[in-house]
Image: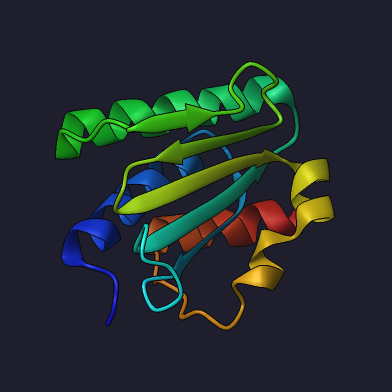
Length: 131
């Protein structure tokens, strides 16, 4: 079993939104084989709490506008360090870079297949990694 077309579309839209708000290290995994609750995870990080919130807002706006999708659950918004957006088909994790390093979610899901992100997102990842 692999992530649904809907999940892949939502991941790509969310990744583009995150990149537009200068998120760092944007990665996506197909977790459909390991979890029954969702098909995909999108992970990204930001330098500060304000940027975490800006990324979250942009992802929500983009998914609502282009896919008529609204999260069924949001967690962590008050603290602004690690916000989880649950869209059922995908779960988006936007983390402060310190929390991203500490929890290392990508290490937990490294055996899952990566979802190919749009070229613009990949280029943004490369450019920010060099800076």
